[in-house]
Image (cartoon, rainbow, N blue to C red; front, side, top):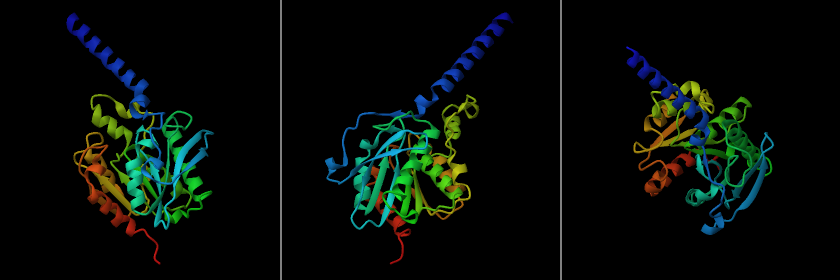
Length: 278
């Protein structure tokens, strides 16, 4: 009996230590920023302007503005949880070819942006980008499409929800390889831990999108090796606004490239539904 109690105590202690480690290191697990910029849009022959913003927390936020002559729409690009804006040149090339002006920015703690990443910070960063775009850049809200990939999809969803509460409605939203919430992701990865009670940054995209009527394009690959396809599909199914689902293929980080023209065609079809009438 004593031996069994001792084993049980050790197992309990180990469980508590693992849970404590997950709680203490969760932001290092969620955010993977890179500080050094490895390239700029000029390396792929795209004209751009460096943008410096200040979010509501007082943090300096760095971004790039890539205007497109005769742009059909403007895209606000919220990237994923790794690297920085210099690792998104292929996407910028693709969006430019689709006739989009693009504002891409780095979250706090990423690239040349100050501060540290957190849900509060990324939400403030996205709002600062929106305010610059619809203020200094002069873009009309109804001409702006919110785009988020992976974690960026949750950031874009949060921005859409915030704007809706203010009565502001962008042209639409594109959520690619996005999850329903961080607690859902954590429960999938660590089903044996009380993740839902441990999570600090929740990024509840399902809640943020509730009640919205924005035209939305959801994209996800069944082969996604990071964000389960089931979570992306669930986010699509619970959305109550006008929506389209694009089944992607390939892994989490490169699926949009693996798809080639089919990916661009899917975006083009959706964007065509958002363009104002002549």
